[in-house]
Image (cartoon, rainbow, N blue to C red; front, side, top):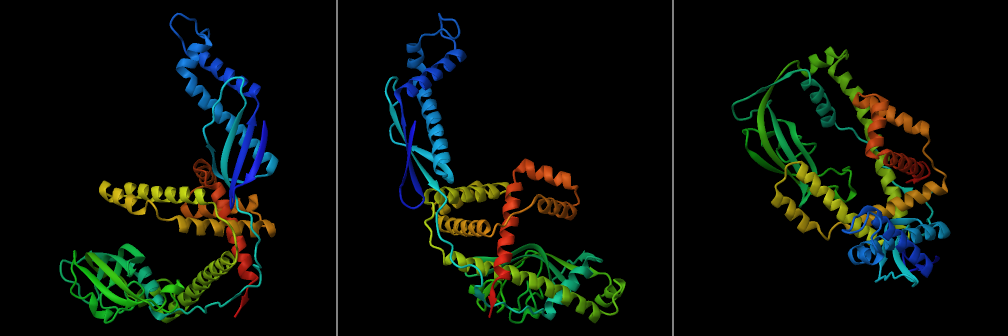
Length: 424
């Protein structure tokens, strides 16, 4: 078998395999012998049917199997001889006729990992935001812990100041949903709602009852996680499911029960913890900004067919999640119809980012050791209250170990970019 590989442009490779006549004849003969061992023809003992009868009934199936076997062999040889890194499945193209005593030519089209030059990725300039913990964030954390120690009694009346609303909350900028929480608690009479401060927020929830809906206008904060939405208007959609009254220790009493010197002292402790959390969030923000800088500075051809197929898979996965969550069939059909041609650009961005990160990891010799994997499994096991062996077995069964390794490798690359950056 003679193999040639041609560059079809971008990530496309055309693999041609010249199959000698004797190989075609041999493979066909093997295919018909295998069929003969499996089937019985009237008037013939098993395995003794003449070839022409087998060809009449099973000729098409045998030739398809042989064609695929030869294509698989050709692809394997092309990969080994040319160090190809194939993406997805190679596709057999053209009308390939297999006849005994005649040579054949197989043509496959495949997409490979893109070849590209990495731009400078160390020492990139970026502005690092300064974390700022606000009083309402400390209060929200205190109230959350306080209410875990008390009771929530239903109130069969309109909400008054001091009551709590259990509600489904959705925050939107235009048509885009940027926050969603089902069954959260909102404090009636408090100015902040879902981390935002709508106009007259301290009065907006008064008088609401179970089943009521409310829409409030607010502005996203200047330190919002997405640059493109900072300071932009948004709408808070509230669907009340229950009015509740808290019964339990006051904040001051709760603080003392936790061994705190005072409510203010507890607040200072929480401020430190929240500041640390925000520092970590800023680290992630800076890392994503840096890797995006590198991605945008990288020129590469992306695999078109693979991207289209992957986008379709993601849409199908989302449809499956909708099905699992009880969505109506009509809703799922409409979702599939609306999104059949969407997502390719998003998939290409994801692929480009992954290719860049992988290239940096190879250049910097970033690896994930078995010890690191075991420590991460132990950490997950501790968090979910299971043994490390159980978690490992689950990961192996689901095939998610490789995904975990890739995520850990990605985290190392992003950390490297952040540590090597220049901050304005």
